[in-house]
Length: 179
Image (cartoon, rainbow, N blue to C red; front, side, top):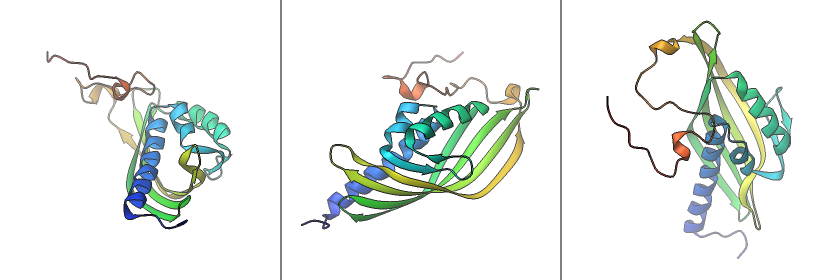
Protein backbone atom coordinates (compact mmCIF):
# COMPACT_ATOMS: atom_id res chain seq x y z
CA UNK A 1 0.00 0.00 0.00
CA UNK A 2 1.48 3.38 -1.05
CA UNK A 3 2.69 5.52 1.82
CA UNK A 4 2.73 2.65 4.32
CA UNK A 5 6.28 1.57 4.98
CA UNK A 6 7.15 -1.20 7.34
CA UNK A 7 9.22 -0.27 10.36
CA UNK A 8 12.23 -2.00 8.80
CA UNK A 9 11.80 -0.04 5.54
CA UNK A 10 11.55 3.23 7.48
CA UNK A 11 14.69 2.47 9.48
CA UNK A 12 16.55 1.53 6.28
CA UNK A 13 15.43 4.80 4.62
CA UNK A 14 16.45 6.85 7.65
CA UNK A 15 19.85 5.13 7.72
CA UNK A 16 20.39 5.77 4.00
CA UNK A 17 19.52 9.45 4.42
CA UNK A 18 21.89 9.77 7.40
CA UNK A 19 24.62 8.10 5.35
CA UNK A 20 24.11 10.62 2.55
CA UNK A 21 24.46 13.51 5.01
CA UNK A 22 27.66 12.01 6.41
CA UNK A 23 28.99 11.37 2.88
CA UNK A 24 28.41 15.03 2.07
CA UNK A 25 30.60 16.07 5.03
CA UNK A 26 33.33 13.63 4.05
CA UNK A 27 33.24 14.89 0.48
CA UNK A 28 33.56 18.49 1.62
CA UNK A 29 36.44 17.78 4.02
CA UNK A 30 38.37 15.66 1.50
CA UNK A 31 37.49 18.03 -1.39
CA UNK A 32 35.96 15.06 -3.22
CA UNK A 33 33.78 16.73 -5.83
CA UNK A 34 32.32 13.44 -7.10
CA UNK A 35 31.21 12.42 -3.62
CA UNK A 36 29.65 15.82 -2.90
CA UNK A 37 27.85 15.81 -6.26
CA UNK A 38 26.53 12.27 -5.65
CA UNK A 39 24.35 13.35 -2.70
CA UNK A 40 22.15 15.64 -4.83
CA UNK A 41 19.46 14.97 -7.41
CA UNK A 42 20.25 16.62 -10.75
CA UNK A 43 17.58 19.29 -10.28
CA UNK A 44 18.35 19.95 -6.60
CA UNK A 45 18.72 23.39 -5.06
CA UNK A 46 21.44 24.22 -2.53
CA UNK A 47 20.95 27.42 -0.55
CA UNK A 48 24.14 28.44 1.28
CA UNK A 49 22.78 31.87 2.17
CA UNK A 50 24.28 34.95 0.58
CA UNK A 51 27.28 32.94 -0.62
CA UNK A 52 25.57 30.54 -3.02
CA UNK A 53 22.10 29.52 -4.20
CA UNK A 54 21.81 27.21 -7.18
CA UNK A 55 22.01 23.74 -8.64
CA UNK A 56 24.35 20.91 -7.67
CA UNK A 57 26.87 21.22 -10.51
CA UNK A 58 27.33 24.93 -9.88
CA UNK A 59 27.43 24.35 -6.13
CA UNK A 60 30.17 21.73 -6.40
CA UNK A 61 32.30 24.01 -8.58
CA UNK A 62 31.76 26.91 -6.17
CA UNK A 63 32.43 24.97 -2.96
CA UNK A 64 35.54 23.19 -4.27
CA UNK A 65 37.01 26.59 -5.14
CA UNK A 66 35.86 28.10 -1.83
CA UNK A 67 37.54 25.29 0.15
CA UNK A 68 40.94 26.29 -1.27
CA UNK A 69 40.95 29.14 1.28
CA UNK A 70 41.44 26.58 4.06
CA UNK A 71 44.34 24.35 5.03
CA UNK A 72 41.86 21.80 6.29
CA UNK A 73 38.26 21.48 7.34
CA UNK A 74 36.26 19.15 9.53
CA UNK A 75 32.49 19.05 9.51
CA UNK A 76 31.11 17.31 12.58
CA UNK A 77 27.49 16.23 12.67
CA UNK A 78 25.50 16.18 15.86
CA UNK A 79 21.72 15.80 16.05
CA UNK A 80 20.21 14.33 12.91
CA UNK A 81 16.44 14.10 12.77
CA UNK A 82 14.87 12.36 9.78
CA UNK A 83 11.12 12.32 9.19
CA UNK A 84 9.95 10.02 6.41
CA UNK A 85 6.85 11.62 4.87
CA UNK A 86 5.94 8.72 2.60
CA UNK A 87 7.66 6.24 0.29
CA UNK A 88 9.49 8.90 -1.67
CA UNK A 89 9.82 12.07 0.44
CA UNK A 90 11.54 12.90 3.71
CA UNK A 91 12.65 15.91 5.72
CA UNK A 92 15.95 16.01 7.62
CA UNK A 93 17.49 18.48 10.02
CA UNK A 94 21.18 18.02 10.87
CA UNK A 95 23.22 20.06 13.31
CA UNK A 96 26.75 20.67 12.04
CA UNK A 97 29.82 22.42 13.40
CA UNK A 98 32.32 23.14 10.62
CA UNK A 99 35.92 23.80 11.60
CA UNK A 100 38.02 25.57 8.97
CA UNK A 101 41.78 26.05 9.45
CA UNK A 102 43.33 29.10 7.80
CA UNK A 103 47.03 29.71 7.36
CA UNK A 104 47.84 33.35 8.11
CA UNK A 105 51.11 33.22 6.15
CA UNK A 106 53.40 33.67 9.16
CA UNK A 107 53.29 30.16 10.71
CA UNK A 108 50.15 31.06 12.62
CA UNK A 109 46.87 29.30 12.11
CA UNK A 110 43.34 30.56 12.64
CA UNK A 111 40.32 28.38 13.28
CA UNK A 112 37.02 29.53 11.85
CA UNK A 113 34.19 27.63 13.49
CA UNK A 114 30.75 27.83 11.94
CA UNK A 115 27.69 26.23 13.52
CA UNK A 116 24.78 25.59 11.23
CA UNK A 117 21.89 23.32 10.52
CA UNK A 118 21.26 21.55 7.23
CA UNK A 119 17.53 21.56 6.59
CA UNK A 120 16.99 19.13 3.74
CA UNK A 121 14.15 17.77 1.67
CA UNK A 122 15.05 14.32 0.38
CA UNK A 123 13.36 12.45 -2.42
CA UNK A 124 13.60 8.76 -3.23
CA UNK A 125 13.49 8.52 -7.03
CA UNK A 126 13.40 5.37 -9.17
CA UNK A 127 16.82 4.25 -10.35
CA UNK A 128 18.60 6.80 -8.13
CA UNK A 129 17.33 6.33 -4.59
CA UNK A 130 17.39 8.86 -1.78
CA UNK A 131 19.17 12.13 -2.57
CA UNK A 132 18.90 15.77 -1.52
CA UNK A 133 16.29 17.65 -3.54
CA UNK A 134 16.56 20.94 -1.64
CA UNK A 135 18.95 22.10 1.08
CA UNK A 136 18.93 25.27 3.12
CA UNK A 137 21.90 25.97 5.38
CA UNK A 138 20.71 27.79 8.51
CA UNK A 139 23.43 29.83 10.22
CA UNK A 140 23.52 29.67 14.03
CA UNK A 141 26.85 31.23 15.09
CA UNK A 142 30.47 31.71 14.10
CA UNK A 143 33.73 32.28 15.91
CA UNK A 144 37.38 32.71 15.01
CA UNK A 145 40.26 31.83 17.30
CA UNK A 146 44.03 31.44 17.05
CA UNK A 147 45.54 27.96 16.93
CA UNK A 148 48.92 26.51 17.76
CA UNK A 149 51.50 26.93 14.99
CA UNK A 150 52.21 24.07 12.61
CA UNK A 151 55.39 23.29 14.57
CA UNK A 152 53.32 22.89 17.74
CA UNK A 153 50.79 20.50 16.22
CA UNK A 154 50.99 16.82 17.30
CA UNK A 155 53.90 15.03 15.66
CA UNK A 156 54.12 11.44 14.42
CA UNK A 157 50.51 11.14 13.30
CA UNK A 158 49.35 10.43 9.78
CA UNK A 159 48.23 13.79 8.45
CA UNK A 160 44.92 14.24 6.70
CA UNK A 161 44.88 14.94 2.99
CA UNK A 162 42.20 16.86 1.14
CA UNK A 163 41.99 14.46 -1.79
CA UNK A 164 41.97 10.74 -2.60
CA UNK A 165 45.45 10.29 -1.10
CA UNK A 166 43.88 10.53 2.37
CA UNK A 167 44.29 7.31 4.36
CA UNK A 168 40.49 6.89 4.51
CA UNK A 169 40.44 6.17 0.75
CA UNK A 170 43.01 3.35 0.88
CA UNK A 171 41.89 -0.23 0.24
CA UNK A 172 43.97 -1.34 3.21
CA UNK A 173 45.62 0.55 6.03
CA UNK A 174 49.41 0.81 5.82
CA UNK A 175 51.51 -0.69 8.57
CA UNK A 176 53.52 2.00 10.24
CA UNK A 177 56.51 1.25 12.39
CA UNK A 178 57.27 3.24 15.52
CA UNK A 179 60.59 5.08 15.58
